[in-house]
Length: 282
Image 1 (tube, rainbow, N blue to C red):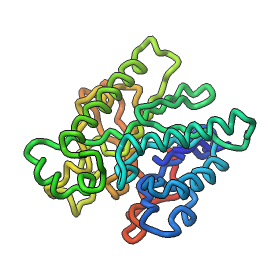
Image 2: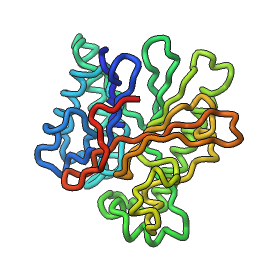
Image 3: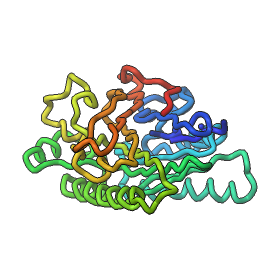
Image 4: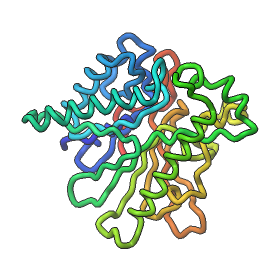
């Protein structure tokens, strides 16, 4: 995600109080991918130098870049190594800012983290990968058909994936409940950004894949979770599905206003998702 001077979010801000979002840019599939697009979600940490250069360009344009790790970041690596590299990039940016580089924006890696928008809006952004839950009846299909279990090292398998989902979901629920408490009067709006999709609503999925055995590889139904139902949560941005959408969904008994679900994904260079908008804002 970004926040510009007057607005990124890998899932971002154009104008001081708006978020500009882009996801699943999959720049690793295109030799010029990092240069070709003004805003992109950097993929694959085997391209660390390209990623660092890409982030540098974004940080010269935006007050803040919020980066939510997606599954491709860990390909040809492991999750611990991936997060170590992302944190090192974040620390390097922080050090340069502290040393006086005022033109460099803030880099925030949202791996179960929060970012409060500057100013009086009372808006907090919560971000995590979220992963997804693979139910037992689809575990075999997922383990055979999901590239993650071939491309990510350190024994990454369905049980590890489900543990990561449970960890991220528990963190997100707790963070939302804390901020949604009536005593947190200075927080008026919560925005959530995740890589994986939190809804099985048909509008959030490519119609070509609604009956696929690997549906659980793209989304998890969180409609009954506190993070989904809390009144202060106004919008949820996500990626991973390679299908663009922007709609609202009713929640529970109606005590909370409808929740906006939105995604803006470029997709692969050779198979771009319809409806991608490089200037889309929230």
